[in-house]
Length: 405
Image 1 (cartoon, rainbow, N blue to C red):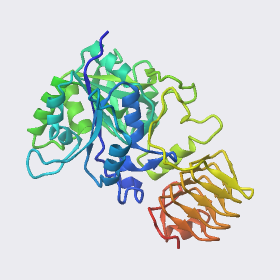
Image 2: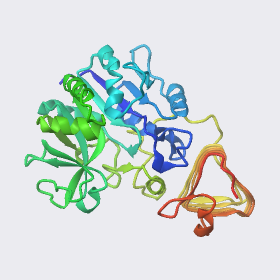
Image 3: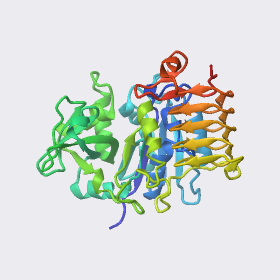
Image 4: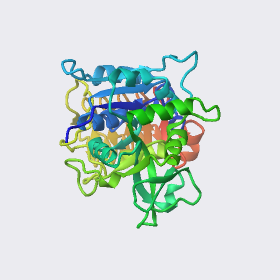
């Protein structure tokens, strides 16, 4: 079967308020993750590994570091006309910014008209997962749907926190799209599970354009993909679900198959990092058959000196662990941890310096934070709350360059 011409659109304008202070001066998709990546690298890797090589990234909120990362890292072949390009809000339809995710695509329809694809893949930019989009596209074409929504099964007791998909008895056609329902509907044949939306959509091009135009003329709409476009197409009987559990990615294991993590809160962000560091990780960054791609810094390998050690941890290039002890932590590149320091359950971003005999437990440090000798963070949460951001789950977070009190 010949493959359709596909355009990828990545929605990357999210403000990410629940990730403050990590999003104080960067867009949520630009937040570093896993010691070597940014959140947007996961969706772009999935699309590129899945042979989608023409991708527009719609940006808006504090997008400088995101735009720079995309333009310097994601360079495709000019010989074949492939590209990954950031597209800022351009006010093509008047002096206004994007009012929602659907409006972002509507204001950027020139990209669709220029590319003339048969299928438009619209994915979010801030989740951690692996997915082969070709399998979702194949189902979309086979069913003749106007839109196919990626859904992941989740226990019903937890599904009320998300957008929930109610499907017909055939298990495919969407009957309702419910935003955070108090009593989520079950899946036919599996009543204790509910489908939640992953925020990933496959559209037939004509159906997408028609829905966006209709939504743009609705003064009562908030112009959101999940809140307006999908319910509209569901009401027309044109929306189907794709079961993410059916997606098979080369190199995946039984342990990390169908892994998906919404890292929209500080606790979820921290938990996702802890998923990386066990001996048999819940999410395996070492799958070379479906790599998560990025641009590694030109730095020497990590160095451990003066008895420094790291257990159940990941340590980035150029970092030096000098007589310090690191456990269950993710250390980015160009980090120095000095003699006698102890880190446990931490996420440390690049350029951080940690002084002698400092103690850090369940701490996230953004770039270029300097921890003085003997400092303690995450040891006394009541004291930390008066100085730093502390998540509901007790993770202490310092923003970029924040001074340690």
